Image 1 (cartoon, rainbow, N blue to C red):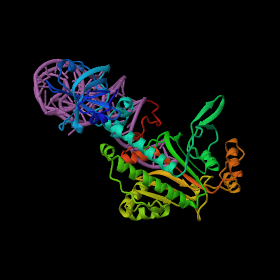
Image 2 (image 1 turned 45 degrees about the horizontal axis):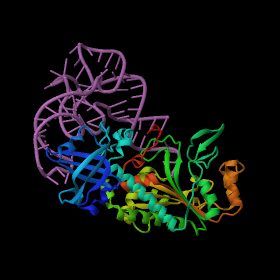
Image 3 (image 1 turned 120 degrees about the vertical axis):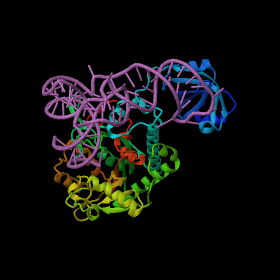
Image 4 (image 1 turned 30 degrees about the horizontal axis):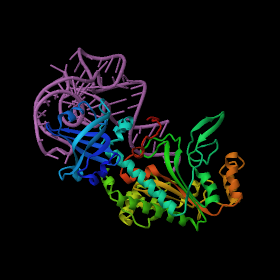
Length: 434
RNA sequence: GGGCUCGUAGUGAAGUUGGCCUAUCACGCCUCCCUGUCACGGAGGAGAUCGCCGGUUCGAAUCCGGUCGGGCCCGCCA
């Protein structure tokens, strides 16, 4: 029977069997301390017997061990418990030293990210790296739980799709049994189709972007949360829903994972229950007043404005999340619904300086949609779109939703400087392995 | 795609107005000492053709040209 490190306190005075990895050795002569790592954390093992210590000679961090010993109360030990009278068995000997440090925080300096990712397979065992991905796992769990509670159905849509897609980003092309296919850059069309089935659907899945972008916020394989909901009562319905989701998920994380957030040096959370909303025109104006730089001719927000408005909202509204509304109609996709005047019913959610979500209302009226497609130069009779239109012909209610970058959410929640650090094995223009 | 910038032991850094460099430090590794460590401590040791190729020079980690590989910003995009 295996006992986990977190269960040791329940077994004081009784011999237990532990299995895990050698995480740290400290030899003090007649007394040796080792840390054993398992899925629940670290345990300190004290070894006095010379023959037992000798078994660990030449064994590097990463060696897989079984330790039989007795947990005892020990205020001097980390966690207040340690293992005495230990017998060690090496299950998998490791004699090569790790290529990157496992027992100390790793450098996340931009210059060193290449080394970090080259040695990712081993480096992820580092406790600080683990904490990032523990947080990531919990964030996606909280999101799922929030969506299930609100009556959503989780779906899976194809990632191999026919040549024509929904436009926007560059796509990866590949050979599909002699036909040209692409990797899906978004489940956009499918999730709208599914509104006709379940009203409320979501998907957490990779999306592929072939942009030749080399920045701290772009990768070619991104994990997207896609949400779509039917029978909405206006665009604000969707904005409010996203706002409530983000608020619920982040406040829960800061409550339940203060320890992991501290381990990675995450910033304090400053969030209001109602996120401030500014139109892009207002942001251009405020930015110009504050910095003197005129961005009013820009259609979208510049990266610097995104950073600036988040700082502004944090000070002015006590909230690190802010909506930028009033996307100019010229940036509109054919499936977006027109808004007031020269705008689309679409907003961006910015958090800690970066866009993490785009929140449009969709055009649900078949005739209008066909017209907008034609205006955008998209052929409604193309097989990539005819199926999509069929769903509208057979009745889709007013609906809206959002695409939400999980990687960016994790990056900013943890306080990292590059979205790749929030991804186990990131893909970018010059990295395809590990 | 454009601009800027970086490349020194397994890891992180110093040295870069040419010569005190036979390349320095820390972590890690090896040997020895150490019974309360928890970034343990102490003594000693191994480990780098300074990304690669060529040039200038009496002399190049350092200057020049090329090349390869990174990074950051912009554009594009989410």
